[in-house]
Amino acid sequence: MFKSYSESYHYLTTHIVPGPNSISYFIPFLLLPTALCIPPSILSKSRVASLFLPLILACLIHAWSCMNGLDVISVNLMQWSFVLLVCYDPRRTFIRLRQPQNHHLPNHEKKEHPEDRPAYVEEPYPRTLYPRIPWVLTLLISLRLSNWKTGHPSHDRHQPLTPLTRTAFSTHAILLALQSYLILDTTSLLTQQDPYFHITGTSITTPLLPHSPTNLLPQPLYSLLSLLPPRLIRTTLLSLQPYALITQGGSLPTLPIILLNSLHLWPNEWSPHTWPPFFGPISSVPENGLRGLWGKWWHQTNRYLSVPGRSLARSMGIDRRNWGGYMLPVISAFLLSGVMHMGLIPPKPLNTAMSTLSMRLYIGLFFWIQILGIGIEVFVSRALERFSPQLRWQGSVAGRIGTLMWVVLWFSYTLPLLAVPFRELGYWKYPPLPVSVVRWGLGGGWWVW
Image (tube, rainbow, N blue to C red):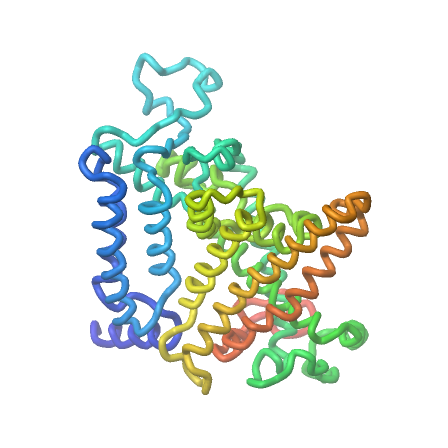
């Protein structure tokens, strides 16, 4: 039985999704917290970084060689380790902001009424090991550094966050999960019937297939849809499905944790209702274009990838308000994000003539080319502000419409880069959901797997 499980796991991590195939993969998950638990009085920042970072990298290189490639989690760990050990100095400058629990406070600090307690307690790097361990572990899962002071005013002035109540968060999560379900269900109905998502080499401008008896969409609706440019239809589907998958993953799985927190079996700092929203306001897109989409609306889990660029700008004395000071973090974020997302491709994908390297480069290129788009956007917006300040373009109705059209045009030509490897991996070969309410409502079967 063990052999069959081992063979199944090897098949999964070789052909479907990359994953650990050696003990060296897991060692860095112990090395990073160990490094941060050593007080600066014993090892300085430079010594901790010079000792532990090469060890972490060596373990991961060995793990990647055993995997025959990268995966998202291990690359994420390497980048997060670099940020914490090189770009920041959390043991000296970070302060954790936590909500005190009444039973955790010393007797002389306990209050009769909860509203009399301080909203947050500032907790710098603990001097003793026992409280230091949860301090470090909380830091390691705080990729967005919410409820942490880092010593940088641009970040610290937004801390601490005002958390939602558990009820408000749970209600929002359920509604978001339902929305994501309907988006996935509806878009899969279209991707299942469109050859662009299944046949290698199909152009994104190829007209939609004529309506057929197997097409569940009403013919008048399908005819109206066919009047739109095929590129626009397909890039809309390409953007909606990842959004729905990510929001689905950030909503339903959080509910059991909220339940445990309500029963006092899970700490507040590790409960999702105390974290910032997964996505920002969609209004950021027409207001700020690509900068608003990536910087404010799209999920901010990997925002720390811009930190190396900001650190480089500070070390070079470049003002963050200058073009270079703005673009260096952008370059850092998208270069590293491209490398990390290349880890989505398994070492030996099935049923494809495309090489693994080519598929990874398509994914990396999508992220790397965003640097060019944001650079163009920054240059044009600053030129308009400088030479035509009386236009007041940004924030006006015409400005929002123009900005939104620019974003749609940009992604109409860059999102297809992701379609190439995802099509080769067979992402659209099967419906993403076993039960389809939309198909059932249109007269089809409700079970689609």
